[in-house]
Every structure is written in structure tokens, then in C-alpha cells.
Image 1: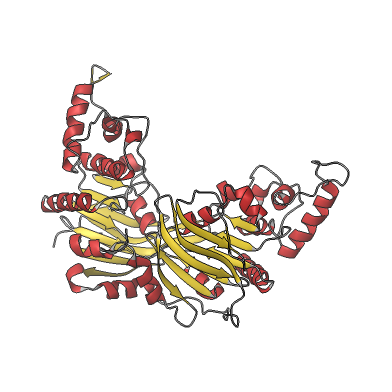
Image 2 (image 1 turned 180 degrees about the vertical axis):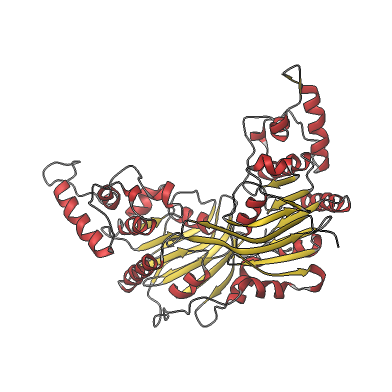
Length: 505
């Protein structure tokens, strides 16, 4: 028996307290398209980045054929014949298409860029991905997202690796572009290239892959020949069983209508979403990465434009289209962003400033001047209520743990008259104790009649916390569940539905 082209044994990886890979095994054979699937947080991206030299493993072994493989960086992986095309576009907009294609190895003559040769090799690379008519001298900024994605793929193929890793390569492509890509992948497979293909689109896997490996919670669940499995079986393997039993019983009846969305569209990602949110209700937004959850919350809060559809507020259903986040706050919205570090915290500033920033007390006889005595007293009471662990309120918030930082980000809104909470991954990166504390706070807000819309990639969180769960997939609603009907299998099926061939576009 010949050794697999790539063999992975016992791979482990953690980011702080977050364990991502738990002793994972995987093998990739010469000349196969091997699909890699799993829900959010399964470990797909981390695994692929370790293989491609973008991350390092904590433990475990990788082998290329009979040789040990441990790349120091992406260049080391490429030297070993492994090329990855990332899902996140890395095209440099100020450079030409040709320069983007060969940035790591620009052709030169006597130390001067050989533009004629660059143009010729770029045309050949573009032709491979169906972009024969594209001018390689065009600035990359002039391209649409789909063409930028094909340029990324062309750049990867130009490096002529033995192993090609593609992370959601068709997310921005049209049907014709996908067919061109698949024809190219089949040619590469026939020539002996091994392809690791990561995708949410199960119909694509049936068309292009030879085998499929399912990851769940950082472990390999199964590797199966594609022709011997079914979509339902794959969903069942991805879903597993919930780690926590639901603990929040749906409240008797629903309060009055607080927010109604009708066919809301935003930025090409939110493609027509309708939902109702009632007073005293916690509604979860579930789905895969790229489903449109974060983009929907940003649009509701006025942080992204609404391109179509309507929003209505309150019992009277008054039309509402916030022109800014300030207007949304004035109308009773609170927003907790997904990226706490970059969008939620004022990292160089103190705990006190971060806690009070949403409602600074103004001195009675000095308009525009902060009453620091009142501010300090209110912050002390707030932090005691939230059980935030800190040295003193002048301490930089960057020195607090992630869980305590998140309590401050959420708690800063408690001093305002909030009617509707919009929370994006509110417990990501926090420990169990902080998570329970945040859950208790949100349930208190709901019991007080406030409405909560929470986007989360954690199925257990949605099942535990929410009265209803609305599943988004590819920018549309594909399922709605209450606790009695919410199962991992039903949730996962809905999460993939919008990516299926024939889904609304």
C-alpha cells in the first residue's frame, strides 16, 4: 500500500481556553477531491490553515507521503506543494489583476519587472478559470466580488501545488462560473492533484467530491465515499446531539408586537428577511457563517443601509428606517457587536468610561460637562450588579478577562431605556460562569418586557436561551422553531437549505 499524500494524526489546537481541534485524524489521497464539512466551530478553517502554514498546531503530526511535514509559514507550505485559496478575499485593490496573480513571484529581467511576460502569464492563468476576456492590466478594485474570487483561485492554481485547499470557493460565483471551476477541478484531479474542498453547499459536494469528511467539535466524525451517503445522513452526522438541555420554557403567550421586518434586504447578503419580535421575547438567529445574521442586526441598528423592504416599530407599527445608529439608540435599540475587541471596546480607556459611555451623566448646571461623581457611583453599582471582577474603575478595560469585558459591553446599555436588544454572539470567548451570568441578565430583561434578538453560532445557546429560533441560510429565512420542534437535525437541515441548488437567489 502507498502512503496517503497527506496524513494527519492527533492534531490539537486551542486559542486560549477555546479548544478547536481535539486530536483530529485525516487522510488525503493523491488525485482525489476530498470534501470537508461541519457546522460553525467544527474546526474546518483552523485545520485547513494549519495544513497551509497559516496557523501552527499545539500537538499532533502531519506527513506528506513518508516525510514529516510541519510548515513554519504559508511560504513553507507552498514550497512543499500545498496551496490554499482563502474564503476571505485578499486581492489588493490598488494593484492590477496581473500583479495580484503573481505578487509572490513577479517576473523580472535584470531586476526590472518584465511587464510583457507578466501580462502573458496572467492571461494564461485567467483563461484557466474562464476569464479569457478579462484585461490583466485592470486595477483589481474595478472587479466585482465574483471575479475577485476567480482571480484568487487563478493565483492559487498558478503556484502549481500538489495539494489545493479551497475554502468556500463558490460563495460569490454564478452558476456558469461554478461549472467552469468544477471542470477545472476535475482536470486537476485527473492530473493527480489532491483537492481539499470546504463548503456549506451539500449539492456541490455530491457533484464534485470523491470522499467527504465530517467534523464536529474539533473531531473527525466520519469519512465516507460520497456515492455511499445522502444529504440527510451528512446533516445527521454534523448535527450530533445537543450538549445542553433547553432550560428556558416559552412564556405563556406573546406580548405585543415590538418589531416587524418585511422582506428586508441589505448589502446583497440579507436577501429578503421577514420576522416578528414581540415584547418580552428572546428570539435567536441561527445559521452558518455567511448566512446574513450579523448583517441583518447591523441593518436594523442603522449601521448598514437597508436596500429594500420595511421595518415597523411598536404596537402601532410605525415605519422605521434608521439613518444612523444614533437614531436607533434614540428609539430604544441597544446593540452588542460580534467583534468585542474592535467594535465593542474602547481598549485604551478605563473600565469606568467603557461602562458609562452609552449614558454619560451630565452635571446639573454645566451642560455638556460629565458629572464624574455621579458617573463613578453609577458604574460601581452597575459593576457590582454584573459581578464584574476588576481592580478599580480606572483600570484599562483591556486588562480584564474576556468574560468581564463582555459583561461591561452588555451592561453599559442598562442605564438607558432600551426596548429592543440586538446581540451578536454575546457569549463568544467567555467562560461558563460568565455565560450563565449573561443568560440570567438577558432573561431579566425579557421578564421586564424588553425584546431580545440574538445571533449565535452556538446551537446549545440558542436551544437553551431562546423562546423561538429563526434559521437564516444564504440571506433568507429557511426555518423557524420553538423549543418542542427544535432538534439539531432540523436546525442543520434549515441552515443548509438556502445553499441548495434552486434556492432563492
